[in-house]
Image (cartoon, rainbow, N blue to C red; front, side, top):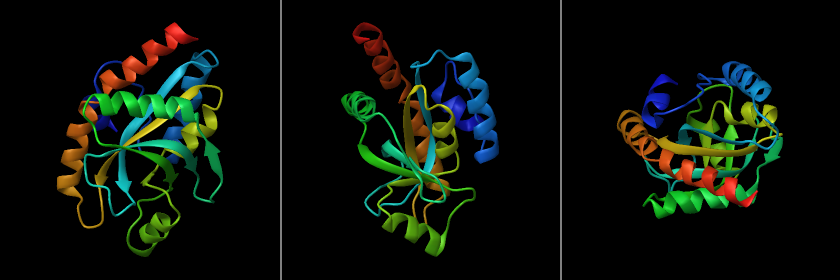
Length: 178
């Protein structure tokens, strides 16, 4: 979304909201990138774990699509990005993220939470499915939890603003190690 891109700043490819836009943007990006290029998909999500609060960060180890199919992401890259963000003072959780074609509420949200996923979004599964040849790291900032939407969105956007330097340090470290 535009607000997420503004919060991140710098060179950002916006996917837009939802699976169709995410698929199209990821396809265009994949055509321009060399295999193995580092990519960070960052944005806002809903928190599924009751222990998460707005503004906390989730770095995905895997992304699940709405049917439950799972795409495993590079664990080393996820851990390195999480470490960079922690060094910058962020509260970071590492674990699975699930994607949905719609916003989730009520029992559906509770069901996804019971699946072990930490966060829910509407883009990651489709981006991960398209950018499988890249060093993709999915980072989601919790914006809303059950019953906390507007204030959570504000906290999430503020938290998103401070993540870019951690992404850049991770990417720069790859240049010296690969």
